[in-house]
Amino acid sequence: MNGNYTGGIASAAQDARAAREPESDRRQGLGVEDIDGLAQLIAQIKQRESERDASRRELQLGEFLVEGWRVPADRIAALRSLSRTEVAVMRFLGWGRANKDIASLLNIHENTVRTHLNNAIGKLDVDGSRGLACLAGLLFHPVE
Image (cartoon, rainbow, N blue to C red; front, side, top):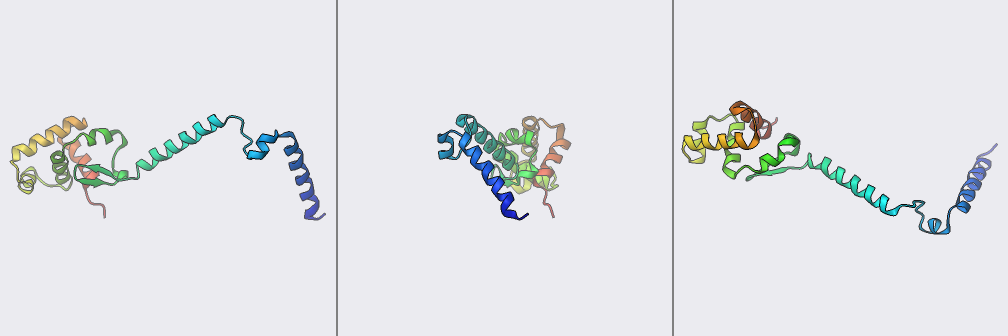
């Protein structure tokens, strides 16, 4: 048997299916009865894709951009609530700087650095300065 014979059967089946479809569906080429349901499904797919892609995008924290894969999803809203100075202090903390060094670099008093760190601990709901240092390291420590 040659390929033409099999193709003829497939073609006949397609013709029979087309004869059973309403003329409007064949004209539009849809074959879908619920256009609104399809539109909702497409919107849901696009929303999920954008949420998935959000984890890959950069996140603006204060003056700094943080790579999206570094940011824990459950901390995004809390991180956005930080002030510019709190983010700057966290950045230096993530680089392993001491409070005295951070104060010198930002030209503020060491007690002010402690205040910013305590405010960040409260806003981010982490377990003390170690938890904040771990999160800061995750966000800002250079990856090589």
